[in-house]
Image 1 (cartoon, helix red, strand yellow):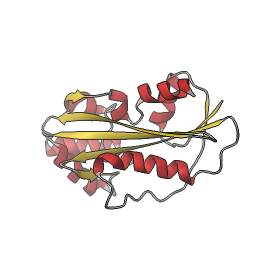
Image 2 (cartoon, one colour; image 1 turned 180 degrees about the vertical axis):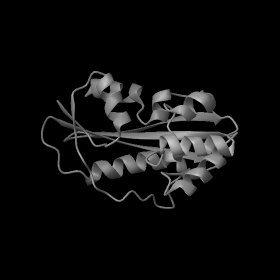
Image 3 (cartoon, rainbow, N blue to C red; image 1 turned 45 degrees about the vertical axis):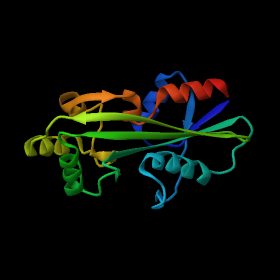
Image 4 (tube, one colour; image 1 turned 90 degrees about the horizontal axis):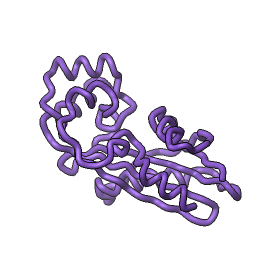
Length: 184
């Protein structure tokens, strides 16, 4: 089996490699727009399937893995920040509250498509304006849903509590990926 990881995320590459799988990274170009009728909790799976469907036809023996992570608070979808101001606003919104992180994965072969979503609740301590400025300046979270990476300073210093998989929050529910790839 030849695994194709359709992600440019260094975190997903690292996690899949650490699971012990050999894989090739491939690029998929598709517009990631979630229709309004899709619920926040279903959006990560929707985007993951959208990416898988945009990829070329698979050859026998190829397995495609796509993923998408969505951060939500009060049923409001937080994607990747557009700029520094957007990142500040997102972090202020998350400060002192519990939010959800959904990561959807799609694993596709020539004859089947499996899509799963895992969710984790995350509680962030209150963030001061100085802490938000520090984090954005030093970690540039512009490629991360919700404007933060749990594996970085904000996760180490300000995550008060979480309920769910650390790796789901990081961007790849490794327990689901491992289980499905082993079954294929």
